[in-house]
Length: 196
Image 1 (cartoon, rainbow, N blue to C red):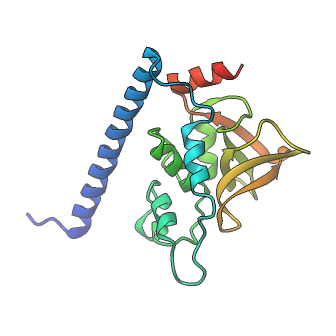
Image 2: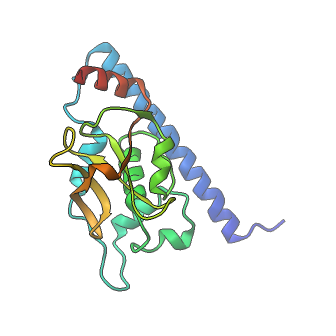
């Protein structure tokens, strides 16, 4: 029996995803244990938001080149090889998935912004919330991470990918907001309870 290179690549990709999921689960369990025994102070901002802030300024390469970091973001989604190989592919959801993955949390693994509407739990409009916005006709949309409490002059501010072809802060009209989501974990529930 001969196994084609494409089949081997697909198997390796599945193994890599499974290993990453196991690593995230181990990290989440450790953080939860640290919180329960009191050895880790409560964070002042969610870890995924700190990770996103560290990416500010990442931008697409003009012309035919591709930014390798944006290709890393795209690799966290189920996009096919062609979609993951170009930084011109819409990548706002990929960026949020990448931030969540780096924080040891499960994202949606989807490149669709509105996929985040079915993820996690509803929560307050506070820094770290995953915000989903209307853009064009459904299923199009935009997703980013809230950076300010509430709205400011009718705008909700997010750090997002693929905003002016980069990772940057940008305000979106509050009436465009479709959802405000948070990871559904005990750690996040404790964090949100601490905000009250």
